[in-house]
Every structure is written in structure tokens, then in C-alpha cells.
Length: 397
Image (cartoon, rainbow, N blue to C red):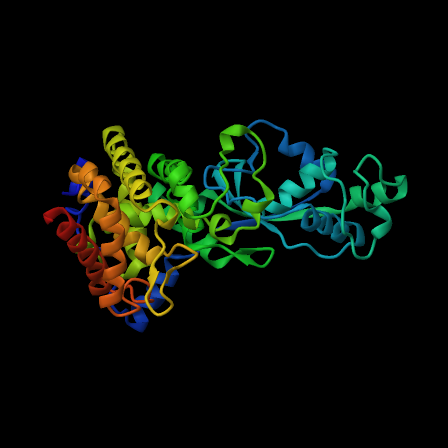
């Protein structure tokens, strides 16, 4: 049976999210008059050398907060930003949040800040420039003096969401969520899990990132092993991997924890994941330790049974296992196995039978049962029930 942390059992005792009632025109006018739902901002502009120097001041601006996005920009894209500054092409402003008076964190524009810092620190070597190919291979220190002087005159602008915008920590989180859902960086929209990673930073979010680095999990999703604790930038293969770059690996881990509570499913898949993340902020250290253990044991069990077929559906029409894993099927596998952890060694002993029974399960059910786009409560519960029932049949033999 499922092992739930105490915090998980208590999280569902909270009242359901209130549905706002329809306002009259008079109430709408009153709401606007009270300055509700309006953000307080100011705009700043600094020349690039001054901006880079300011970033070195302790506590001035956190350019890589805990909710940072995963690296997206390669040297080519960073170089073309510098080329834009050289040519005086307008660059979109940064969007920062004032965490305390005159203390900021970058909410949108991290990649631009990183590129400017890297170039002024002579860490970025210009590459693949389109209009100034003569500068390819140059660092900031090696730019012609006139070009360097022109670049130093360029400015970077940023919009600040002031602390006055939020009266509480909860309101501040909601503001951050709004910003990350509405803004984009360099034309690359934030993924759903990136937004959660921004908004719900804390021990549980850290746990998701930690568990997504477990070797059997990464192998199942064809992700190269890497950990930020190594202190090195991620391999280019990861940077270019959309699944990893948009934190979908962390979302898969979150789906596991949330869908163990499928009976509480509401607001659609993304809304349910948001709800679980919001309520996870109250988890204790003991809660997190139990969750860490349950996930690690479950994904290890899955790898022992399925090997390189973990999370890969059987394609009955083509008579073969799919080459790539699938989230919806992965949900059923993880939740089903977690529900039968007490029988782990029996299932491993009957590994061949489990694999064959999994194949047969796909043969007798509709093709889209496990891989379709259906994410209603009934769809989710059906997938989990079918997989768990298959395990029970193998255990009963």
C-alpha cells in the first residue's frame, strides 16, 4: 500500500480553493479604486560596466535565485546578444523583484545577465556573429579599443517590482507566478514546471531536483548524468534537451508524488500539480525523508524489472516497445509500483512475467489508454488501476 508522509495526510484537510464570485460593475470599480491587483514598479537604466560592477556588490542582485531556470543559451546566442549591444539594437529590459529595499532577484533576464557578465569577465569568446564576423574569437579584453568604448556606453534597463506590491509572502509568491507566466525570455516561454520552480522554492522543490538526478531515473528518460554540485556547466546535450531544459524531469517526479493521491485529483493535471506544490510548503524534514525513500525505492524497483524499457509503452500495432518513455504510462508504473513496494522482491523474482503481463495489458486495452492525451480524473485513475491490477495478477500466480 502507499506510504504517505504525515504532511501529505494533513494537506488535504485544508479547505478547497475558493471560486471567485461574479462581481457587479460597482464591485469591479471599487476593486480598482482600492488598487487591488495592481503591481508597483519602477524603471532603472545603467551602463553595462556600471551594471556588471554593481552585480559584484554583496546582496545587491541575486542573478541566479533558487528558482533559477536551467541554462538555455549557448555561446552563439550569448555572442549575438553582445553583438546587439555593439550595434545598439534595443534589448528587452530585465524584470527583477525587490525582495527587500534595494535588494533584488532577477525574475526574467537571467540569460542576458549571464551573457553580459561572462563577456565582461572575459569568459565568453564571441562566436557565430552575423553582422560583425570580424569579432569572432574575441573576448572583451581583446576587442578593438573603439569597439570596447562604444560597448561601454551601452545601457541595460530593468523593471523592478517593488516590495510595496505585496502585503504578505503568499501574495509575493502569486506575483512571481504571474510574472513568470506572462513574460518570456528571448522568445522562449517558461514551462509549467519552471514556473513552479520559480514560485514554490523550498525544501520540497529541492527534493524534486535531487530525485530527478537519480541514475535509474535519468537513464529511463535518456538524460546524461550531471549534477550542479559538480560546479561545472551542464553538458551541451542537456542544454539542448527540451525535456530537461523545461524541467519536465522534475515534473515527472512531482506527478508521482501528487498522483499517489489521485482520489483527490482536481483542476486538471497542471492545476493539481500546482495545488500539491503549494501545499507541500508545510512538509517537515521527516516528511521529506519518507518521500525521498519512497521515490528512490520505487524507481529502483522499476529499473530492476523493466531495465531499459522503463516507462516505455508496448506498441501493439507495431509489435514492439516504444523507443521513448511516456509520461502518462510512467505515472501508472511509478504509482503502481509504489503501492506494491512490500512485494518488491517477489516482483523482481517474477520480472519476466511482469514484463509479459505489461505487454498483454497493452494488447487488450484501447491504444490510447496509457498514452493518450486524456488527463481527466477518470483517465488518471484508470491507468493506475489497470497497472496495479496487472501487478496483483502476477503476485497471485
